[in-house]
Amino acid sequence: MFTAADFIPNKYTSTIENGNFEWSAPSNIALVKYWGKKDNQIPANPSVSFTLNNCKTITKLGFEKRENQNSFSFDLLFEGKPKEDFKPKIQKFLERIEIYLPFLKEYHFTIDTQNTFPHSSGIASSASGMAALAMNFMSLEKKLNPEMTEDYFYQKASFLARLGSGSACRSVKGNVVVWGNQANIEGSSDFFGVEFPYAIHENFKNYQDTILLVDKGEKQVSSTVGHDLMHNHPYAERRFAQAHENLDQLITIFENGNLEDFIKVVESEALTLHAMMMTSMPYFILMKPNTLQIINAIWKFRNETQIPVCFTLDAGANVHVLYPENVSAKVLQFIKDELVVFCQNGQYICDQIGEGSIAL
Image (cartoon, rainbow, N blue to C red; front, side, top):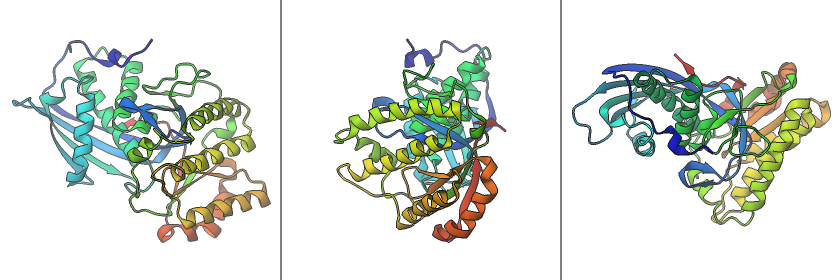
């Protein structure tokens, strides 16, 4: 049985004084949502996501050996400028992962990071950000332990990313990624994300995700607070069971390519996520009036045209419009004609399924 202790390294066989690495890591959009967690970033239910391609964080990690090794030492730049308010989150991340990367206090780090999309706008910037940082730290560990296998490298990167932001573990490797123990998915784990191990129908290859930026402001409730509210939630246990059921359904749907069934699961999951927020104590609503306008317009368009376009939502107001590649032209025309008017400053991002993190 796997335990977290399996990622605590033995003595390193090599040394390195200084250098730098650079990785990009994408955001991801969950189809079955993770909402609620136990200690140490363990999910209360399993989730599965599409890895995105264009919405990503690019992080460069510079490192050099130092004399004083009593504390963590790092500078943080966001889009080239010092970003003090990000530092506590990085500090907490380093504290959580030090047992697994015992070299962290030996170096001074310069973390230089940027996003290709608006920060804290309901696109999972913490997921891509923590995944990119974890990939960089693993690159350094691989220099210290050159015998490391590729499988271990990616598994541990996902494990570490999870300790920074739960959904970050789904941004490391693969285009469809499962996180959380699920009886019918071989190799699935609460500790890290795994590539979906079964057949995926052609219908889902290069699936499209157009993200409608309804509200680019920071969310009124952080995901961390939202997850915590599941602890005493009146509907929590049924919700966790539902996630397992929906993930089981998706195993079949991914194999047979049934887009009608896919739409039912995905839209139900999105609305359930927001229903959990509306029925927690304290309760909150992250959807905006324009979010509902978009949802209703999508339902009307799908009903009238029979084009298999659907929506999903993260813990925010923005809408992810999901559709197969072969209907792209018609859906994009519909978005321009009818949905852009509901976006803040008419802004939206065209994305599609990607493969995960990339060394630059």
